[in-house]
Length: 146
Image (cartoon, rainbow, N blue to C red; front, side, top):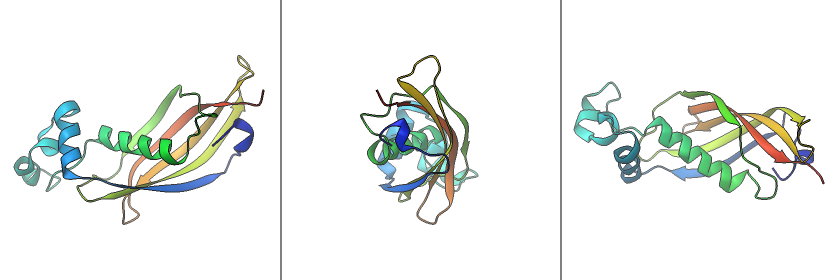
């Protein structure tokens, strides 16, 4: 997504390939979300998940990495006022390979700043079996033509 003019409501983009490792699940969770099913393999095996899973916040971070590497443009992306309706739909496990699908749902110029527009998108992150593991509604400020 380069600039506001490059985006249309209904645009769909699919991209990415991110392989999740046990080491990064443990590292992220030990630092930011040390619940037993994220940091302790034995406890995770006894949990309702039946094994180690990534923190939902880690899944958000991996999704953001894929967005930055494949969709957001340094010239056009101007940050975000927030994200709505984050849903952790399925657990992410070691060895999962994640990809992202985005669909532009709305766009409007900002009256308060003629240099920016607001683009809203529905974002889904899926695993290698095409199962949705994360969904969210995003809003992003995008550079408009000078």
